[in-house]
Length: 493
Figure 1: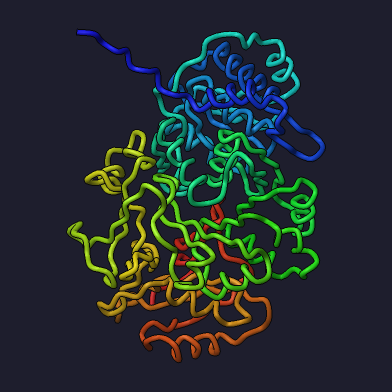
Figure 2: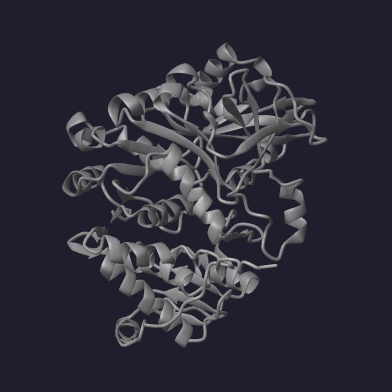
């Protein structure tokens, strides 16, 4: 009886090496006046992977990347993969104590840092002149590990609370790329302009999937003015752009001439938090008609996508499930519920992680029966469109009645003066919780007028007890509102 040896697991960096042979002069990375083609990209990745190995990073070891948004950052993403190690994203803007907390939990073998940014509690490698000289002198002609191990920790909690990071394998990461190509418009013929931090899951994954496909990645690191972003899109002929809702709202304030280059994009993607139906219309009409909203999680990748056509049909939804993913709405007993019934969202597919690294307790809560529970509430309609109702932990229970913050936030943001809104539960002795709202505005508005708007369009008990106008909403490094900080501002009623 003959035996066929199993093929080695594919390492994502293998594809970069293939591109170096088959499309050597194709631009791979562009940042300002600097361009690397695929031949240069492959050599730079191999040299850095070899240098990591020479410094003692072994296959399966964890490497923190706390670098600014630069070509070096992208090179290190694929270099860590090439070395058979695991990427641990670390925002270079964090304080030392935040980096130390993450390092204490994950115990990285090394952390790549900017010059002068080393911190105690982890072996830091400064990306300075000495690093670049050592890399250039490193022999990259050697065998590298396959992709039988993890490739990245998809951090889900930023620096707040207990760090949680599922180990995502090379194959699962590749399966996420398929969603980018099938559902979002990325591919080998596209030029993706990365205008969000590479620490952010979307910016990192979209950049890596574009390079894997053989396309071109343009780096346009924040902060920047809208005019500069639009000009860079025009200069580089970029065809795909990803922005979080906060950045899109800033663009909406620009004039038509400024936004003209964005109107020519093949795809504009938004992800990170849901937009309102009115905002989606405004973005299609004033920024880019080819606007797609992408609902996803760091732990499991894509969940659903809302295309321009779908926005016209069901503008309040987040679309239909992405390629290869099964999405269900279940009750508290994990039993699927019929369309129209609100419950917990769960999903499974070839890109979903298996659990959190070194955290069995959190894994048991979020990963069950092969499904991942992202912590969101939602419902399906009878045509398969998914509607978000907010975070399960953010749900307000007033006198035994469930109130979904997202519904109230959408109503507040329908007012022309409101630019952003966050609704939280206000501890109350009488009702357990009341509704409190925090808003940012573009023009003066009386809080009572906003309360009256909610009362006129929603059930009276959903209207905020009080609306607080604030300069800005507290956000984590991923741009999401930290509602716990807002709750801390409220004295119990």
